[in-house]
Image (tube, rainbow, N blue to C red; front, side, top):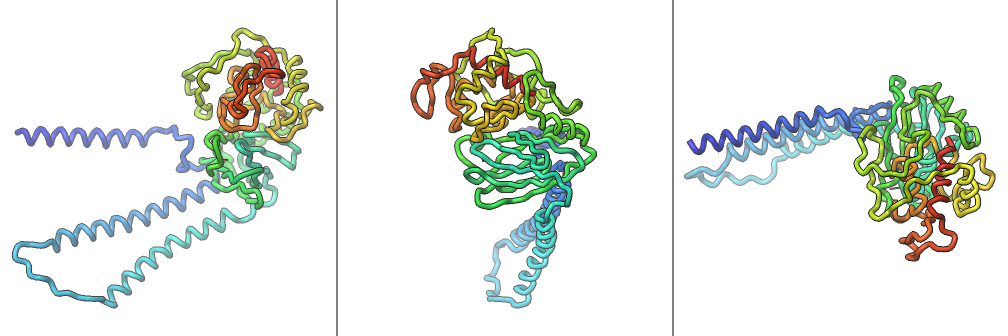
Length: 405
Ligand code: CUA
C-alpha cells in the first residue's frame, strides 16, 4: 500500500515536470533566441543546426541503445566461465572506422557549404554599414548616406545589409541573435558579414550584443536593430542627414515605437518598469544616485552648457559647430534614440540626467567622466568640485539632447 502511494506521488510529480517543460516551450517571447531566424543568414545557420542536431541525436540513440543492450545481455551471471579472450579484429575495426567517417561526411558537407555561403561577398547593391566596436559601445556609419550614429541601426526589410566590422580597441563581436552573427570586430583586420532581413517582417526592434568578452562593461555593450519598411528607412535617412536642431520633429512615421517620449520631462524612476517592450533595458539604477525633483530643463540653455563644457571634447553633434569630438558616441539626433549607455538604460530624462551626472557609476569602467558637482569619481577617487555641473545645468543638457530628434 505504502509503496503504491509513493509510486503515485512520483508519477504525478513526473507528470507535472513534463507539463511544465512542455508549457515552457509554448512561451513565445524569446527575444534573444536564434531558433526563429528572420533573415537568410539566420536561416542558413538554423538549417545547419537542425541538421547537426538530427544526425547527432541518431548517433547518440544508436550508441546508447547498443551500450545498454550489451551491458544487460552480456552481464556476468551465476556460474559463468571466463569467456574466450580475443585481441583485434580487422573487419570490425575497418567498419567502426568507416562508419564515423561516413557520418562526418554528412556533417562536413553542409557545414562547409554554410561557411562558404555566409563568408561569401555580399550581393551588389547591399546597404553598407561600417561597424566600429569601442569599449563599450558601437559606432555605426552609413558611408552611402553620410550618417554616423551609435548603438542603433535602422535597416530596410528585404535589402541585404553588408556590415564592415572593425574595432577601435580590443576584440568585440557583433551579434543580433534573430537576424545573424556572430562575427568578431578586430583592430588590425576588417571582417564582413551580411544578412537580408525578411521582406515580410513588420517594423520590428531587435536586440544586439557584443559577444566577445571585452572588459568591465562588456555586458553593457548592446545595441538595437530596427528593421523598417523601405519608405520608413528613406524618411529615417532623410532626417538623419539633416543637422540636428532643437525642436525638429521625429523621423519615420509608423516606425517601431521607441521608449523615448517626445514631451514631458519627469525625473522619477520606475523601479519596476512594466515590460511593455522586451528591448527596454531593466538595468537597476545604482544605489545612492539621486537627482533634484521638479527641475525644468531649458534646451537653449542646455546647448550653451553643453557647448562650453567637457562634452564637446568627446561628442559630435551635426548642427552644433562647437561639438566635434570623436572619442565618444556621435549625439546627432540623440533625442530619437531608445537607449543610453549602449543599451544599458532607457533613454528617459531621468536616466539621462543620472548618466550625465555620474556615468562612471552607471556603467563601470567607461571613459565618460563624472560630471556632477560633488559627485565621487570612482576612477580618479576624488570628488568633483570646481567645474562640476549642478542639477539644473544637467537638466538643461537633458532638455537640449532630448530636443535633438
Ligand atoms: Cu565588446 Cu564585449
